[in-house]
Length: 301
Image (cartoon, rainbow, N blue to C red; front, side, top):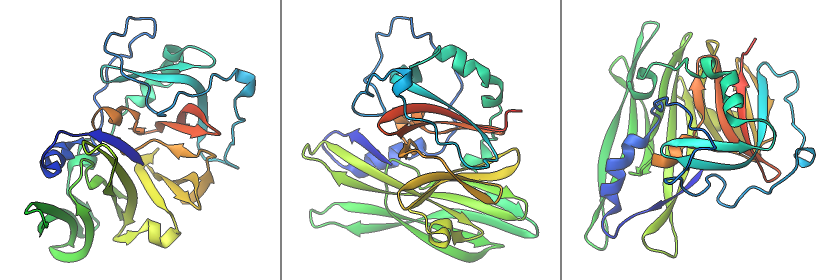
């Protein structure tokens, strides 16, 4: 996932350390503003960077429903998104945004405890699993010093695994820490910056990798990326990308989704577009054939 960040002249390291709090924290729920209300503070549409084509409902790409999907998917094609304060207000091609959001409003409010996003210790059977950051420094030719981060994972106080994460970035290196049945899952995010022509603007590329019991799912399953780990109805769920195609894993099986992009790992104001995780569902924004969608996926019956 790519995000753009404008920064003042000076040390990016300071910015990175301050903004690491942007990591996987559940957003505070607030009432959705009406799309008919004045929007004096509304920002530019995001995502995507360019406006979604104004398609009629008959021109919207057909839904690719996962074969024998274990979860119900409800998608809504959008004309555009607008940020109003810290909230996203969407304009759908069909229907009313507030009515769409009202259908599963109760399920979306069934949030997970903050500990899965902020905790670093889990009891899994007779094993105590915990992680911590290890910081290092790398001197630069210009006399500055960059701070490197690695994640160290311990099992009953014995070092089990070390995961190098590179330079400190605005996106938190740890996005969630879960125990399901007799397994533990740690979602990690490796970020790197891609300088732009404007020296005050950088592009951050963040790639997720979920570790199950110390094993990288990207390596084991041949993913380019795995992200968005949570449980749905108590069973493991996450998104994955393999061979450029996006899908989801749920309770032991993979299902194709048909989206070219699912927005995730957004920092600061961009975090409003991250998947909204709840105990029986997940809501997210994605694109397919150039069309922007709002999608709710879960156990609804």
